Length: 383
Ligand SMILES: NC(=O)c1ccc[n+]([C@@H]2O[C@H](COP(=O)([O-])OP(=O)(O)OC[C@H]3O[C@@H](n4cnc5c(N)ncnc54)[C@H](O)[C@@H]3O)[C@@H](O)[C@H]2O)c1
Ligand SMILES: O=P(O)(O)OC[C@@H](O)[C@@H](O)[C@H](O)[C@H](O)CO
View 1 (cartoon, helix red, strand yellow):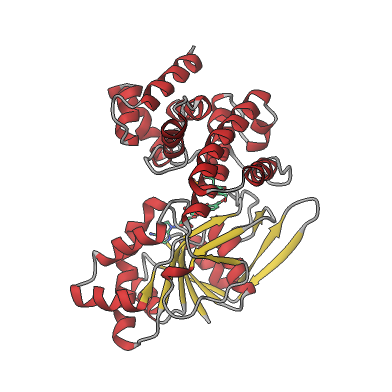
View 2 (view 1 turned 30 degrees about the horizontal axis):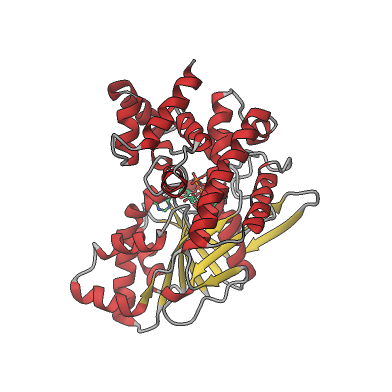
């Protein structure tokens, strides 16, 4: 079985590629990083090291790559012949892979009636549905009708902490042992892909919101407050009692929302929160605050890990989400010249000020109580 995966980065190699190999797939990675593609084609395998109290090494074999920027024709052909397409390129990159994907799907739909599923494995709500919309921009009406019949875009939630690799080994990845890959089975066309480790569910919404608003909201706390306090790694930030306090508080706030919205059991959710916090403390995983804080404009988006649960918390409880407001203030204070979005955010702040910038990137109305709550915390932090 042949899988085509967009994005041979951290999660692509450290999670999706490993599970696909263990389930018997040959995986062809499409990426624009030529060094990684060349190395994949030379080595034809790489190691994923599960780091915890004990180490385990998985040799991921049957892999190859195509530089989809310099060699689009081969990439399109590979897509047209695939048994499964997956992607982990980052939410902002999905529009840029859509045309190539659409070209591959057009060829496939002309030559075969075999269904195909495309799974976007990004930290976002409705990632595959959003990718589908971008792909459909490149199809005519007849192609869209055929694609509605044959091409599934099931949404997914993926969870495994895969830090940037700084060990000089281009392909090898050190990852935490924990993982979760939940896929919306109702949107699948044809047979469910038989991948060991996927949990299929009818309604993904509770799972993606629980993941995004616990793991990713939580992760944002040591990232932004850690950077604010001059720590460089998540582990260092996790040793700071004040940060730990905001983390616990923020996850109580998002927990209130998740339990009420999705009827999760309160005690079970409490245990889930503590398990997540322990994952951030894993001393064997060395993760930099700048990776976890990357893309601050995206992270202040209306449906992302901070604004959405904070808004829902206000709506549902009528109270101020003091801890989430503190993290959002931390995002507004995030300065990092190496991060394009952080630079752009600070440029906007210099031009329009914090309040107007927050409104424009989050889509919140000027009189939204969350804006006032964030400004209150920002003033405390700037003192
Ligand atoms: N790293 C994690 O811990 C983790 C965990 C869960 C989910 N995710 C999500 O997975 C996605 C990828 O994250 P990552 O950490 O692997 O990032 P990454 O930067 O390590 O990998 C992204 C890869 O996409 C490639 N890419 C960029 N533009 C491309 C294009 N046009 N076509 C093909 N490839 C392209 C990049 O070269 C890179 O190799 C994000 O949405 C992230 O939120 C990451
Ligand atoms: O990938 P991002 O930028 O959306 O978020 C940064 C981290 O929180 C994220 O990559 C986590 O490590 C991952 O989501 C864990 O499953």
